[in-house]
Image (cartoon, rainbow, N blue to C red; front, side, top):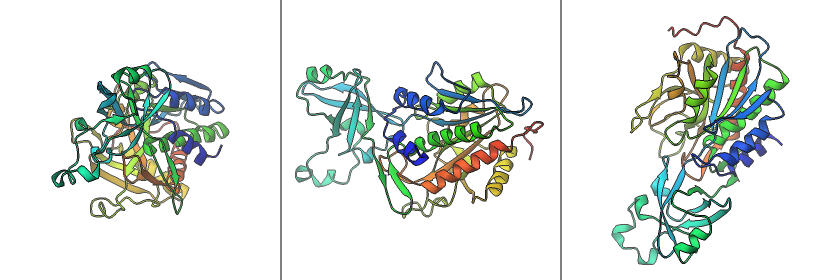
Length: 363
């Protein structure tokens, strides 16, 4: 299977935060031909170990999150409609009229649509209003709450965007959950490269859970693995569309991205200022691989690295990513060349990790 086919396969597997098992099992099988050991920990993280050639070299944890944002059923009406809560940063303005999948407790997937008031009967004052999610409902075609429950749908059942993967022009694709299936596909590519040409450093490749639900899984993995350094692979917000051209410089096709500053700024007051030594390594790796390296600094973005850096005595962290348009919608768009660049950059950086590295935070 090519890495592009792997990416498509991953995007078509729903894995809402807290319900990542299907994708976790897929990743275990994808890692199996390459890793010395693959396991799933108590919280659901998938951890693959590839032992390096030099025990004195630093250990590195490279991670990407398995989960995607979604919805959760909070009420089943008497006439068979579903009311929902948001699970993660779902943009309410994209919800009306969407096709969704309800991941029932029987293991079956039930299709539904998020209802939208008929245009012919919508008052003028409502036509330009974004409906809060509390006013929305899912229609699965049922006529009673008993019929819904017979399908294995209960309060707390997760709901995902209908999975899709569409090939666009110029080597670009639109898909659900490119955030962060692009990072997950890169982990598998790194596993294959490390198995074929063992680096000095021991490598832990981790598919983490519940990133979209307040960044939980990666911190647990880091507490157990205690790596000398850690690298997060995740999306970065592209600014090359008419609505964001004045905000950000990142563009599709411009190459992988080095995260220089992130701060959530809403609710979770955390973020990452990368470790200077790792920034230097990333720049050297980009030069060695002949890659253009974009840089990103923004408020409103948060990755798992924000919590991994706080584990133990402190873990040096770095955010690497690929630019994506329309993040957190069902039609995220990326350039495959940027994902390829992210893999090449990551592999070059991993290969550069040698014994005696000074990881003190110096400027």
